[in-house]
Image 1 (cartoon, rainbow, N blue to C red):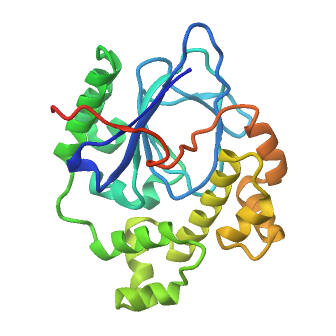
Image 2 (cartoon, rainbow, N blue to C red):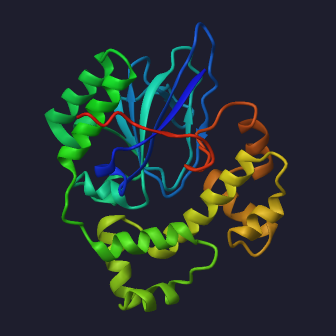
Length: 282
């Protein structure tokens, strides 16, 4: 498996955490992961076979050549593939809304195509990325498109600031302290979150806590479940297990055992390794 990660160009760096992807080599079969709810928004461009997802035990569904995952309430199981090839854009917390007009409540738990998000222009981008010669060309096409659609006027600068703070410290940041720091009331903040993200600040903080705990356990198999849960704001291990069962409908022990035998999309810190800048000539 070829794995790659790039830092975005300067004009996108405030909104995009990284651009990354996988490409299978030879005839290897890749056991793709079960994606869990979290705070993320991720845009995938396939130049080989798109993901197939299992939906409620029914017939598998094939994702579009380019699509967005905005997973909030239930897991999404991707089926194994022997023809993986994709480039993914990982947006910073709350920043997908700089690039699309669709509110979060309409994106939630759906695999939205680039055409759903941007109409004919999105459809054309998906076609061009899929047919591009080489990774550098794909990176330039994707970044040029996003740079052209970046709204310089924030949908709500207070919302963006609050999202960043909640994602950065879900373990310790009480909502009352957040509203004090922002200088507005709790109901005002909740209305802003509902109109843009489709969720409350409490829900976002809870998902951030869950996401970071699972990520820590996936990246370090020797990590203690109790220690990880306490580090990210759970009262104890039992609190984390209950929350995990609510979101995933199984125990974390079973999920982790099966997930570690497959693959996962939890990337290491941007600064943990040598990530290079994506091609900047647009």
